[in-house]
Image (cartoon, rainbow, N blue to C red; front, side):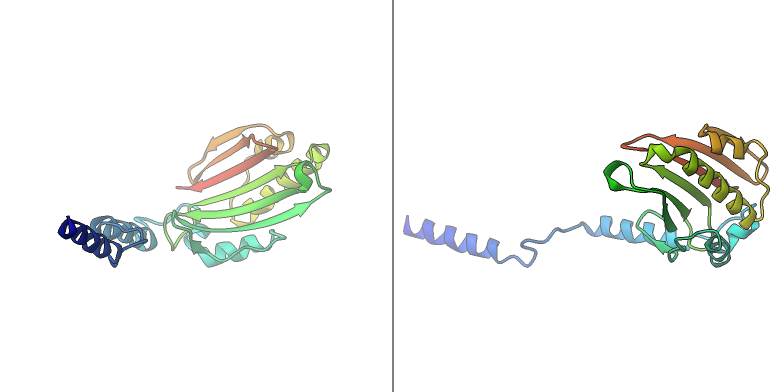
Length: 194
């Protein structure tokens, strides 16, 4: 009995002194797979240039869009899912949750060396100022199209000002305006280059 008890105490003390105690571990294969996917996302070259020429130069795209973004554009960075940069501009008086209406510009990509998608989003916590928010949204989108050197479709501005869904494919890009429902409504315009 004493020998069994001594053996159990010894076994327990060895188990408790394991070098990996209290640490999460990954198998070598999952760690290699994670590293490989990050490396691939960071360095995978584009097979051909994007059809919105400005999107092939991240720094120039940021510089051009910074001229219309009152909140400035953050640095291009890898967030674990892809590459992104954004800006935020608040306007009007507070609404739901004491939040003001706001506009956000997002640049996104799966590759470090190009911008694949531009998003402009208006969030409207103060529905009393919905008309003003949608007008500001439409104006910002018009400026964004001018900044990226692409013509804005004639019927897009009307859809933006009225808060209406919109979708169009052109030879250089896809364009979509859609409602995101939540605690308060948001509209997001998505421009993706081919």
